[in-house]
Amino acid sequence: MSLAAWVIGKREYLARVQATGFWIATLTLPALLFAAVAVPMLMAEKATTSGGPILLVDRVGGVYPFVQASLDALRYRSVLSLQLAAPTGAGAVDTTALDDMVKAGKIEGYTVITNAALAGEQPIPYFTHEAAIPILGRYLEAALQDAATRYRLKQIGLGAAEIEAATRRISLSVKHPGGGPSAGGIGRQSSGRAGRLLAIGVVLANFVSMVIYGTHIQRGVLEEKANRIVEVIVSSVRPTDLMLGKIAGIGAAGLTQMCLWAFISLLIVTVWGGGLGLAAAGSVLGGVRSILLFLPLYFVLGYALSATLFAIIGAMFSTEEDAEQLATVISLIIAIPLLFMVSVLAHPSGMFATVVSLIPLFSPTLMLLRVATGSPPAWQIAASIVLPCLTVLALWRSAAKIYRVGIFMYGKPPTLSEVMRWARMS
Image 1 (tube, helix red, strand yellow):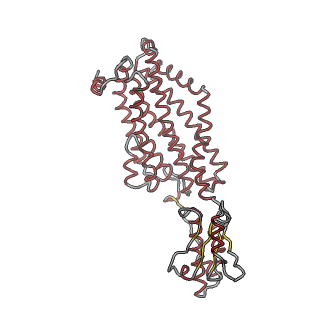
Image 2: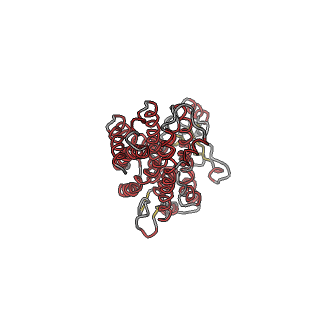
Image 3: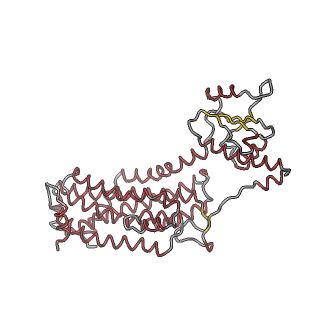
């Protein structure tokens, strides 16, 4: 980098990190992204009966104790309030009265246990004011399924200890072969929920940063063209040095913000991760450290690709209105990896995830997603770094030529043939 490019880059960097908006975004965005992922998880897993308890009508007799045992075994007592419906004076439960209680909002709902339902011959009815089976209904279904199993085992003569042993639940612990740390994965033992939380947050932060700082380049070039400042600058600086200095300076500001985001996210996960039921602190922190090794690198690669494209857009047009149309297309292309996020999370080592993560424009987000949730082979990680670098080098040659000519063009937007001619100039 020449001295002129260094001076320009330093000026662009300081102009952004000294701005108040830079620090507001730096301090608030990690919390917002964390909340966007964590709040739905909390609402789904910590949901409670807002309309009162769920009543159980036991027409078989003796089933309710097994339901209580199932709630303890499944650890549903904190999310599911289930009570036995009291019989009326005639010795039977009046379901008409229960219907009125549901309509009045006094109870969340009620369910009726019969011999046919326990035998699996018909579904267990669940009466509620919800239009579809809510999350609480799913919890109730799992609890009743476990209770029915316990009841059947009791009917065939098993004792309480034997039933408890037969229905003891198992859990899955994800580990990597060899017991050592993976190539950027969560580590020796990982939590799928913690890994997904980290991966989603990292990908969203990476995408937001690439778009924001890419548009900063575009708007800076357009502003200098509109004020005719660029004509004064290039009288003493080569256009390629001006472009390189802008991209490097703004990129350094983005990298600074990304490192601060990573540090703040580390604090958030450390302090509040346990309250969300995430993995043990050692597992989560190990995953964060692994991701932090790759986050700056993939941010730089993604930013270099997007910033070069946005710099070309800024040089091609004279007004913000003309540039926004093409900039929107570029932003949508950069956002395509977000559409593949669910598929990649479902099977990080699959053929589809491997192919799309090696596409140069998609690698900075999708390979980072795979690194955060699994253990991609070393050659795939290397390819996801080399291919974007080669793409940036190839794109830079044409971009520098377009930028050199485009910054002096005003008025009518150029046609595609004119842009191609600029790129072929020596």
